[in-house]
Structure formats: C-alpha cells, structure tokens
Length: 219
Image 1 (cartoon, one colour):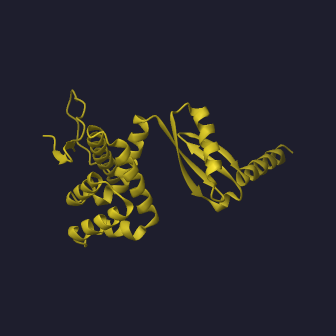
Image 2 (tube, rainbow, N blue to C red):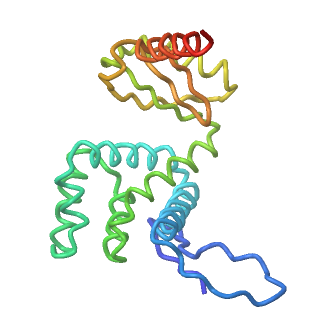
Image 3 (cartoon, rainbow, N blue to C red):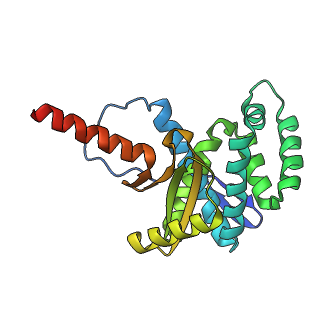
C-alpha cells in the first residue's frame, strides 16, 4: 500500500513505482547497495517534486535543495554529523533548524529533511539531492553542465559559456556547476550530457603530445 504523508497540505507519496508484470517466476536477486541507494534517492526525490508541484512551489524547493547541496559540499562536518548513527535524531533536527534558519530554508523543506531523519535515510541525502536535480532539469528543460577551470571564472565568462551551450543544446535553461581544477593550467573544460568541450591548456598540450607520438610511430 502506498505510503502518503502530509507535506504542508500536499500528500507525499513514497511508494516505489510498480514493477512490470512478469509472465513467469524468476529468482529474486539481492539489490546491490549502490543500486539500492540510487533507488531510495529517486523515490524520495520524486516524492518531494510531486509535493512541491502540488503546492506550486517547485522553484522554491529547488532553491532550497541547491543551497543544501552547496552546504553539504562546503561543510563536511555538517554532513558527517547528520549521517552519524550515534547522534540523537533530536540533536540533528536542532542543527537542521538552526542551519536552515541561517540559510533561509522554507518550512516545507525543513519538514522534508526531518522526515528523512525520522526514516533513518540521511545516509541517502546525496542521492536524493542528485536525483532531485536530475528530475528538475527534465521538467524545466534545463541542461546541467560542469565547467572545470584553472581559476575561478568571472560571471561574464560563465554567461558567455551558458549562452554558447544554449545554442548548442537548444535547451530552454542552462545551469553551470563551476569547479576549479588547477591541473588544467589554463582555460576550461565544459562537460554536459555525454559531450565535452576542452579549451584547457592541458588539453592542448595533450593533443600536441599525442600528435608527436603518432608522428614518431610512423617513422
């Protein structure tokens, strides 16, 4: 029976999608930990999206999830505290309340995080955030791209990259995730979907090296 929970007036459906009918019996297989974590993340993320849509608050929830992802990425101590099974749930909820107040989380986002705590699923938070981002991008026709650069890019540079990606992909929206990678020496690499644009100094050097090796092998 589907589990539906109150979520600021909207039901939160945490039931997994029904499996397709199988005409003959098959031996059950134990789900791998990684696959199980991905399934859990997808289940909770979809439930959050459905509830947010029902409340016409998808953009607000997305902003909160975005802020949460950045918070966990930049503050490993908070992530470890929340996933530590030896720490009381009440203490974790108090931390979330304090941090959420500082960051500006909406009440329904905090309620959802508290639900994850109550269900002992905080170790799946990264998977939930990732699954939420993936589904949100599908719903809003947003192309997600990672931009790795040797130094932090200026806003104008990011705007030009986003504009170029919009032309290439035809997506309505572009969302960039900047990452500083000093090993690139200079320039940047844009990764989106299964494609990549390499405008880094390291990439150019690799091409030169590869060309020199090919020429040497022909001698």
